[in-house]
Image 1 (tube, helix red, strand yellow):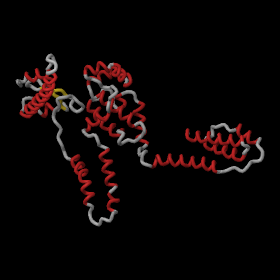
Image 2 (tube, one colour; image 1 turned 60 degrees about the vertical axis):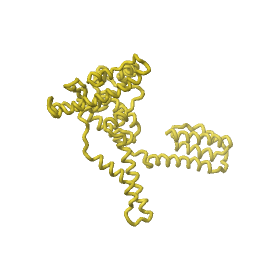
Image 3 (tube, one colour; image 1 turned 120 degrees about the vertical axis):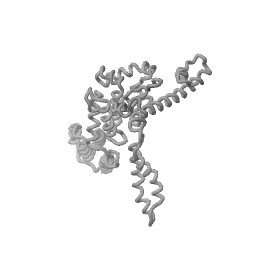
Image 4 (cartoon, one colour; image 1 turned 135 degrees about the horizontal axis):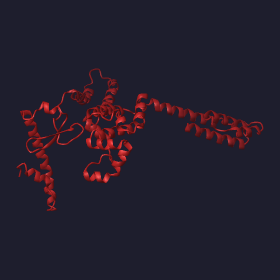
Length: 349
């Protein structure tokens, strides 16, 4: 190891100084220490020089003890790195990180075939992202692996980028082409792989939570402190502790309560992939699956109610953008107002 080699070279230096001063015993002792630290070092010339020295002189053992103590300190530091809680990962974590890092194909990174469905991509991302997230997997390289998994999911979950990737074939070539055309992508609003790529943003958007692991860590920290507080002489229930834990208990209970997600979205994203259009006004919106038409048939009251909400939300969105356009038009009378024009088509003044 590099640390042992450095210490061995230091011992060689001390041995050379001892030879120069005629201290044979000291030189031989440091040569032996250097050999124990690193067997690859050549010390034959030093041993030959020691043979030419006359009777040894008494030498101080403090330097030898210093070197040996330094070596013991290094061993203790290395053992502390293992036992102080930093390396709380398993061989399986390391193997998973290594497999992801060596793969060059997005499908292979997610463990899928090229003809897989969007739902299979989502399931694979859900499974892998939880395993390699740096807050859960502390193995070296977990951040890089998490980023590769997120890039693979972002590319393959979008129809346009997946089509472009299938034509390219390799992740490196595809990312190079994306970066090479970054200016064009920014003009068209499709900057997928520029420098500000944030895998945590995808993770938060997918799971709807940004602190899946950190919240649990805080909760464990607070509960581990409970025995220490109870040892302060309290004979009854520690109501102060219960009050401090109450918010976390409420969060945990809310996490298990059923909740409903919206049936539609005005924007296409990872959850809402399937395009629909309202019968009235032709407003575009997106739903989660093809079963939407079976659950809400065309012409049914439920479908009409959903499309009324779609149109209402769309009008509100147009109103916000129109307000911005009118503000900018105060400084430039030729400034276009496409959202205001679209809003007028709904009969809104």
